[in-house]
Length: 213
Image (tube, rainbow, N blue to C red; front, side, top):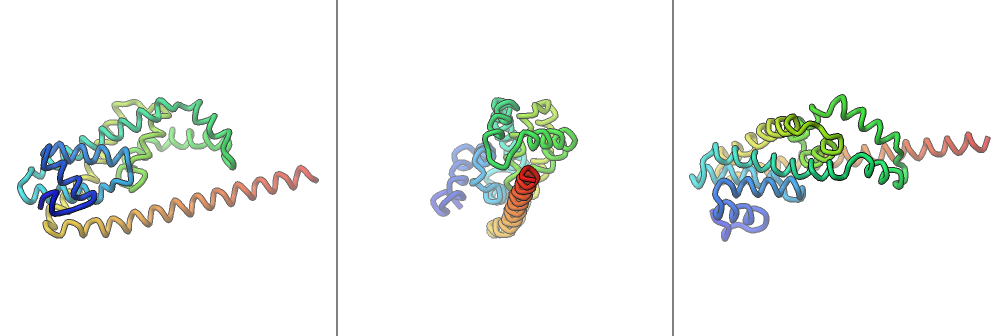
């Protein structure tokens, strides 16, 4: 399989690996962290399939995709650190239905569960990228952030790279099953957002009612 025999994101990823070898898989995953619409569920199994064909070794595929994951996560951490708490609070104050107390509750939650969130978040679609931003905002120590990100990414990447390696020509089957997981996460997030909006609107109505009385 070459970049000329497949199209879309898969063809782009194959092209990187053909040009750069194993580091090309790392570059693809680093970009996937920065641009979540690029699905790791395609790139990782494809790296495994490429290893199956002997273009690169299985160890190299896992190693370089994990390096890419950490690099992309550190870039997002930097964005969060540059954004900072003061800017986040200022933005929250201007948004409807959001209050500074919401930010304070989020900070308290992250202080208690931040390390677990960074580690396990690397194995959840969508959150894989975005969890790095609050870690940067809260200035989680970089060595700890890097270690947790590397370990979580290593677990996720190994599963998908191995799946592509073992499935061989059928590597694309992984994308279908992973897509179900991604959609499930989207549904949960959407329901959580709707629930938050409903509760906040009800709180505001109750507040207005008490003021009128």
